[in-house]
Amino acid sequence: MAKLGWIDVTEVSFNAFLLFEPIHAEYIATREPDSHMGTAIKANTAVDWYLRHIYPPIGDYLDRCLALAKSDASAEEIREAEINVLDRVHDWLVYVLDPEKYDRQDFNGWDNASLLGMADFKHKVVIDIGSGTGRLAFSVAPIANTVYAIEPVANLRRFIWEKRNELKLDNVFPLDGTITQIPLPDDFADIVMSGHVFGDDPPAEVAEMTRVTRDGGMILLHPGTNNNSESEAHQYLVEQGFEFANFEEPGDGMKRKYWKTVHKINPSKLGDCLMLKQNGYEFVEETKYPNINESAQQQDKPQPPYQIPLEPNHPVIDLPNRKRLTWVLMICVKPSRKDVPYVATAMRASLSMSYPICSG
Image (cartoon, rainbow, N blue to C red; front, side):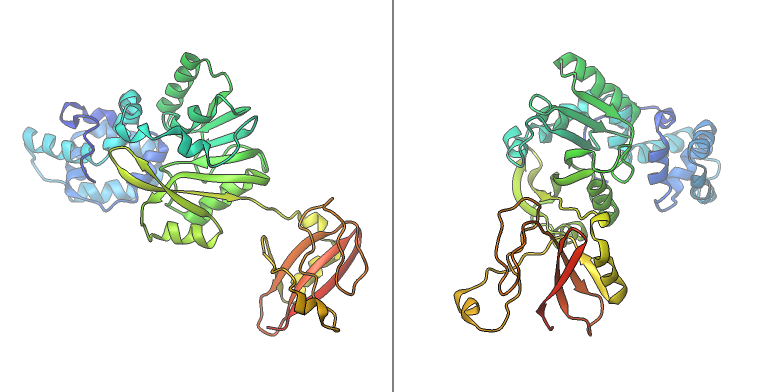
C-alpha cells in the first residue's frame, strides 16, 4: 500500500499486532503469503499465537508465510521484515495506537455542508457505519435525535465516547459492528450513512444498510468512491438507483457521494398477489410510470392505470375505464420469463386486480 505518513512505523514495536482484533486478522488472512510476514512471525511467536487465537482461520495463511520465512535471519533482517509488514497495516496501527492522528488528517476537513445538504437530519435517528473517529457522526449529532456510531475497533469506539463527552453530545452512542453486521433491528433508522468503508462486497453491504433503514428513509455514502471511478462498487450503486455527486476532500482530491431513498414493500400486505410469483413474476421494489398523454386518453380502448399512487391516503384518482378506488397499494411486478406479460397490481383490502401494461 502507499505510504500514508500518519505514523513512523520504524518506531513501532511488532507487538502492536497484539492490539489488533478479529476483523484485522480476517483481512490479513486474505492476503498473499510472503517471506516478510513469515520472517516476522517466526521471530515473534507471541504474535503468531495471538493471531491464531483471535481468528483461527488465519492459521493456514500463517503456516504458508512461515514456510517462506528466511532461515537464520539476522536481527537486522528480522527488523526489516517487521517494518515491511507494519507499513502494510499503517492505518490500523494509527487506529489502535493513536486515533487522534487520524482525526487530524487533512482529508477530514471537508465542508460539513456537503453531508448536511444530502438529507434532513433534524430529529432523525441516524446510523453511522464504520464511524472511525466519528467525523460523520459528530457532523450531524447537533441536529439529529440520536446517532449510533457503528465501529468494529474498540480503541476507536473509546475515542468516540471520549469525544462525545468532550463535545457534550450525549446523543451519540458507539456500538461494535461492521457494514455487513449492524447490531440493530430491521427498519430502525431514518438515515443510514457511511464513508470510506463501502466497496468490499457491494451487494451484501447495500442489503444490510437497507435492512436497518425504515421505509422512506435514506442511505448516504460520503464518500462512496473516488471521482470518475468506474469500479464495480460505482456500477452497482448506479444499478441500484443511487444518485451521486462530487465533493472535495482536502488533500485527497474529488470524491463521489451517493444517496438513495429506500422504499420497502411489506409482503404481508400482498395477499393474493403473492400467487403472481408462482406464475412467473418477480416483485420490483421501485418502478416509475409515464404520464398518460392526451392522445392515449382519447382512445376508445381501455387504458393502463399509469397514475395509481404508491402510498396509502393519496388523493382519490380515476383509473381510465375502471372503478374509482379510494385506497390502493401499488405493487409492481415484472416477468421472470419471456412468455409472461408485464402487469401492475392494485390492491384494495383483500381485493386484488391485475391490469396489463404491455405485452413485451
